[in-house]
Amino acid sequence: MVNGRASSFHFQASARSRFLARTSRSSIPAFIFVLFTFSIFVFIFSPKQIADDDVTKPTFTVNSRQVIEDQLWNSPFNDHFYPCIKPTNRYEAPQNWDRYITVRSNGGLNQMRTGISDMVAVARIMNATLVIPQLDKRSFWQDSSTFTDIFDERHFISTLQGDVRIVKQLPKELESASRARKHFTTWSSMSYYEEMTQLWRDYQVIHVPKSDSRLANNGLPLDIQRLRCRTLYEALRFSPQIEDMGKKLVERLKSHGRYIALHLRYEKDMLSFTGCSYGLTETQAEELRIMRENTNHWKMKKINSTEQRIGGYCPLTPKEVGIFLQALGYPPSTWIYIAAGEIYGGDVHLLELRSRFPNLVFKETVATPDELKSFADHASQTAALDYIVSVESDVFVPSYSGNMARAVEGHRRFLGHRKTISPYRKGLVEVFDKIERGELKEGSSSLSSLVTRMHKFRQGAPRKREGALPGIKGRGRFRTEEGFYENPFPECICHKK
Ligand SMILES: *[C@@H]1O[C@H](CO)[C@@H](O)[C@H](O)[C@H]1NC(C)=O
Ligand SMILES: *[C@@H]1O[C@H](CO)[C@@H](O)[C@H](O)[C@H]1NC(C)=O
Image (tube, rainbow, N blue to C red; front, side, top):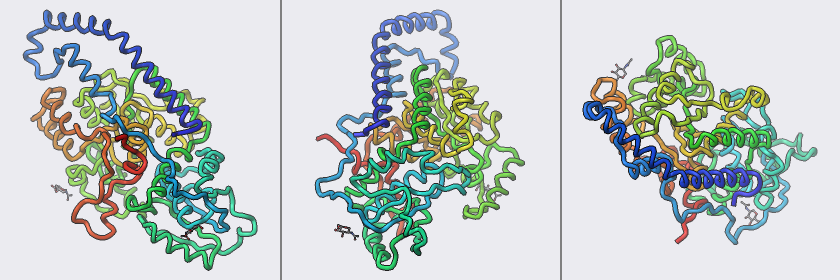
């Protein structure tokens, strides 16, 4: 279903994992022997230590060891599910509409990607030709990249030719025509956009200054939903340079075996926006507060950091992530790729993760400075590399929810429910505080079973997208719905009976 370059990439990756699976099967006897010898050694030489110590060095048998490995790395049970994004047979080819929608996409990379996918669907609903979107250059990330720097434009246009006519520029004669400038209402339905076609009576061009979340998550025709998936998962392929570099990073990581991609959302803007200063110095907390005060479009100014944290609204700190992954049972030798911008506080904070997981890598450590040179000053392009490595990882762990975490999770569901572990932050904070008070011990089996139980159903297993929380009225309910791109099931993922 995923065609062209993207698919050959995914195919190679999965062929590779099949290959790894085969080699590991053939090495099982050797593995059993080593384990057996090891457990005898442990039994003879250190029985006392094991009995005394609450710290778990499980005297595992080979079978349970294999079960643990599977639990750590395998995808959740997802037999009989497959991507389905072909149009239904009621779907008609687009006409060459002489009306145009121009778009300025706002936000970071993933907000723009999902926004563009929505705008493709809106152009289809409104019977318009879409002009290649302009990208946000003013967001926090200050990236001057254009559409063609990040995406494969030709592929985008040709992949969607059966859906929407897309052109690189407005026709010359329309450049000076007056345009309707329209801020579409967020989470709008089909009927809203049908009504908007009235604008065509007076205008030949509609300009849309913001593209994020303009389309409802639910209640849209199947063909519109599938068009959103075709756009995001097929048409919006990254530029060849980005795809090639992303593929290299993934191959190098897989040469060590399996890896976790950790979206460590511990960046300055995120901490400032959420008002989370737990674990920071007073000077740092003050710096973040000032940044928040001075950022006009962040509405919340006065935030009680303690309450934010207790409520589960703070990104996990690097140390907390370390304790979390350790408690889930990942051994210290695990390779962890950190998908993130600059970590706030830098090495000082990372140290507390690195001390638990020394094989901690970034794109800067997996690739050479020379290889990364052309991407370096473009936050959206480096974010695209992180995106690729995250989608292809064996396990994806976001330390905080956000556009990137949601987009990666959704894409992984789409590609076969690859494992995504979503930390239950509210519950974990209680656990971390217990450790701090000495009521629980890091590395203990009680901590491990508590955290494992807490995350049993948070691993990306197949399920339908969740609707709004009960009891919330009005437009606020849209905010509580699970996002379409976070879980495109059932529209774009089908079930073989
Ligand atoms: C778009 O064009 C199709 C085909 O001509 C027509 O059936 C449909 O009503 C149009 N949609 C709108 C919203 O005008
Ligand atoms: C923040 O909230 C906590 C817990 O509710 C409370 O103990 C503390 O006094 C609050 N801090 C401020 C500065 O209001």
